[in-house]
Every structure is written in C-alpha cells, then in structure tokens.
Image (tube, rainbow, N blue to C red):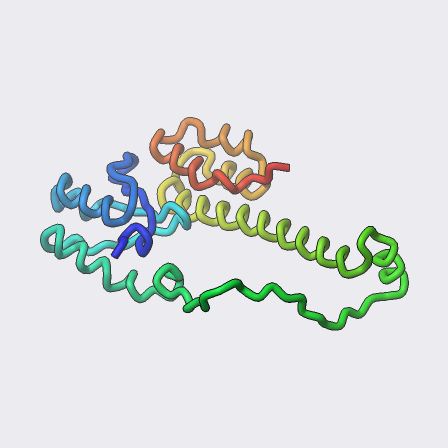
Length: 201
C-alpha cells in the first residue's frame, strides 16, 4: 500500500521550530527516532492542507506507532483513493441532459440573442459560475487552515488579531506585514497555509 496516498502531508513543530515535514509516516518515523520521550510529549503535528492538529500515540517503538496510524486513517470516509467506484471499460457516455428552465420573457430574449443561442449561453454561464465558486471555495479553505494553525501556535503573538483581520479582509501585504516579526518557522508555515487565501483579482 502507498502510505503517501492514504495519509496527509504534515509538519511537526517542537516549540516554535519545525523538526520534520513530509508524509505522516515520514514525520512520525523521523521524530520517533530523533526525539526523546519528553520532547515527543510536547510535539505538535499539523495537517498541511487543513491546518488541523494530528494526534499521534508515540508509545512503543517506531513500528508500533506506524501500525497504529493505519487504524484511524484506513477507515476515513474521505479517503477516496482507496474507495473509487468501479469504472466500466470503454468510452464514457457524454450526453446532454434536458430539463425545464423557467425564466422571464426578457431573460429568454437576451439568451436567444447571444451567439450560439440559449442552450450554449446557459452552459457557459453555468461553467463560469462553477469556476468562480471553486475559486471562492479554495480561498475559504486556505483561510480556515491558516486560522486554525494561527490560533493554535500564534494566538499570543503580537498583532495576532490584526493579522487575522487582514487574512479575512484579503489584504496580502498587510497580512504579511503583521506576521513579519513572528518566529521564522511559524511565520513561513503560515505563509504556506495562506498561499491560496488571497484572491488574485
């Protein structure tokens, strides 16, 4: 089994310093073999895509810890990699599904006047709306991931609240300004989580 597909990529912090980064298996193996038990009790591991903290039971040897990792992640409903529906062999059917659309007369007149007619125009409008919605969803997910990590690791840092406001206001320059003097590893990881938090337009 490819563990990189079933486990998240993550980053481990000991205090304000990054001690390991990569797949969860890599991070767990690295810290287990390099840190003592006291440090492991203070270690915090964060999911690189969601900013959520990952709890790991470090009791026993490295193999014991890695074996326990399979228990929660193997049954996660969101791991679609191992739960893809069976696909039929052959070319997929790409059909047009008809349905009823209710519009005002002026809407129909406008649609009919567009190049390609009403159907082509409606399809274009739907695709544009889907793309716009996808962009907003990506921004929101990045904001939330950044917020989770900032709350856990930088909640008592100077200008934390100001930085948080700029994160949600979408002001990249001011956000960077407020976190510039923070601990380097924490600041850089926040920038990484916030990579998609600001609109490009």
